[in-house]
Length: 594
Image 1 (cartoon, rainbow, N blue to C red):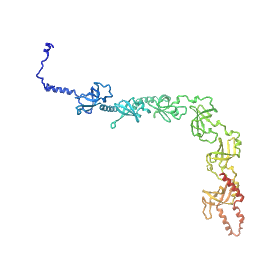
Image 2: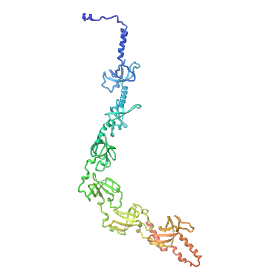
Image 3: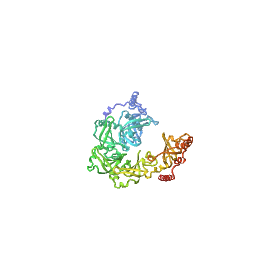
């Protein structure tokens, strides 16, 4: 150093210097000034608050942070695992747990700061309806778990999209924009939604589609739901129904046979209800009708083959090509004159050959027949011989009417058994009292008319007419033991020997003691009338005891001639031995038949 420089140095004031220690040489004013400047460099820090800190030191175990307090704070390095690029000077939010622990150390926590800050951000997102980014961590029951601000939130499956989501796993590990829709601080639960974002975007699209919608318009959509009666198609914010009958010209039992979920399809607008916002769609209408491609050589009388696609009560539908069907009426399935259930002949899926009976290409209708492929049994030359008058046959009862029953002797050959031709001895009011449908009955041919396809049959004619014998057995004046079966207002029905029914008027039920016989009683009755043609026998119980008293009355009249005992008792002795033998033989014949 030169002499000139030594002269320019200020003289040192040794009076102000002492050896009392660091800072002892300041005046009180200077010391107060320095303390004021130092205090201004420190921030006011309160416990249980989140503050910003600057990284001033990094070790393997700890991170040193300066929050502007009189001392720095230490935070475990494990709380910075999500920040592998942490460096000196980075600013980090930390939570002040304690300004000074027992060791005089400032205690900070980044983990708690993140939680508190996250909840504040979540609350702000709910209050201000903000869109936030989330990360789908995993799938859970009923939805997804989404990480937002390091807080796990629940995303219900119904809030993922406007259309049903069948596979939640495709969202796991992906980012997703969501909105907070509900916070439950008691359980620390947060519910978010992604659907609300889509709905807002679709609202404008929906309004635009509805304003421009018109019949005949062709649109592209995505199948979002499938039911037995059709599918719902998303047209871009608006759903339309594609009914199962408008999917294909051919008959299908379920939409899944030709379509699948999430499939893109072109559809045409068939109808639109502006008030109810219902849109009816069609897909088959975009294709030519199969009837237009029906071969010209298919005419009435042609034979066609196909598959049975539906069986109804009145017939079955035969599909000869997709979209082209013909009806086989039940009456055209068999030559039998009695309509039966079509399911007895055909079932869905059967491959059938039929003949075209009627064809209308304009109305796209066709009627078919199966029986026409087989020979008409009424046209067989041996029919007249097989069913000649007097021949015996067995058949199955197919139908019952008030006037008789129809008996099927073979496929296509039916005959009528009149109710009066069922029994010689019983008065059958309705065939159901004699036989049931499905039972077998033996008959004899009474009449055959091939031209009119009529066959008259009889059952009682299988036996001789017992009324020829009854005429002698139940002659007028004979007395028989009878049981009263029933009574009505005018007449009583009696059961005579050998199962024959007779009748008696109510006044002829009077007993000798003045009372009247009731149903269930068995008494002697006298035949008063016999009609072979009408098969009717009238009887009287009253006459059996009145005529016993007639001799006593006649004794009081001396002028009257006495009756001849032999003549008066002769008619009441009943049938002769020959008549009884014939009746016994008839009874055995009837019992053998039963």
